[in-house]
Length: 560
Image (tube, rainbow, N blue to C red):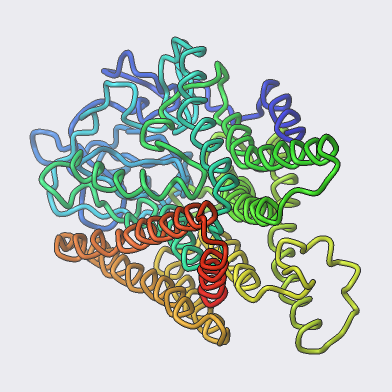
């Protein structure tokens, strides 16, 4: 929380951005919240060529080319050209830039392709694109800056932000209250969310909403797959709504539209993301404090049940906060290089805001903090696996002094719990996959690398012989991600080849995405029934029968 306060103080000061004053003209575009476009283009329909470049041309009555548009982070500019200067314009160094930006949405709902390099953006011959379609409602595009009276929400949209108090109230109700209820319920029931078959399903949920979204992080125009772009977006939002819970993001399609600050920089929302990530840790500390007070008042130790509940709660907090911290930090760390139309390097900017230079203050301070967070997140599971290998296989005590840092992964005898050590592999996979996602690889290269990482992870899991059937559940979840990823690569190949997306492939992906959710529901229901049965047995009036049945349930738990 101290870190969050520090970051907030930095952000409420000035943010060093690139000065593009005088760079834009907005003829025909009025009352739009974006200072830095896409409002800053000449509002007129255009014809896009199919040469795999984001280069839109307006044709005069004679059919000759008069304008050329080029993407500048989140900016589209048009310049009047004559036929004699056209070829020179396309080959010489100009101020027209392109580059990948994680918040650079797309030109519009009928042309939704992520901007990375000109070869990424594909248009069919003579495809009509209305650059101003649906560009009047304050929510159509993500912008680096907002006009006076408009401010960023959690998605990066420019909105009026008229009632901060109400938005904060809704944010607390939709984010803080569900998070509190989730973790307190885990503590009250003693539910072990990590050690059983739920572990890999949570990993799937976290990856399918971050590194392996079936939209290809925006590179695959899924919104064009159905007759209605809004229908496509609703389909994607449905599974994100369910799975984002495991990224500590509740009611995400709604909550991210909330405006919480009257500030010009979107950077401030990274403070909010860190607060969300650290909040479960605050809940854990509160529960630990209450338990310590209860021990002093009662002057005796709490029951074994509550000790186990505390241990399970700590592990759940660790895994969910771990993922949220990793996702947030990766977005801050990795920069992107911006090039001009002549393919010459211009500058390095933030991954999510092309108006902020990477080495500017305070952004570079964010980067340093994020680097420290990622270093710890990456090092922790590696040390855990190393300690487990030295102690259990080499029978060495060289790392004995580090045991207190890994108590979550030890059983009552001080030995490593194999079921929890397996979580270290998933922790490592999370960080590695998020690193791959953040590095601006070519899309196909990124997905191929992810495939290899997942297959290596599945192979590593196969060496846990005591896991029995749950080992196959874990391996199945990883292979399922690989298969869904493969279908995404196929869809991307269709985009690159200017071919229509496959509707059958999309619905196959969409159906497969929900398999882990079905497993999660079944798992929760089964374990809730078992928990309820334990409660009923403890109130049984037959001590001998009660003891026997409880012992049988304990044996079943050990063989999960």
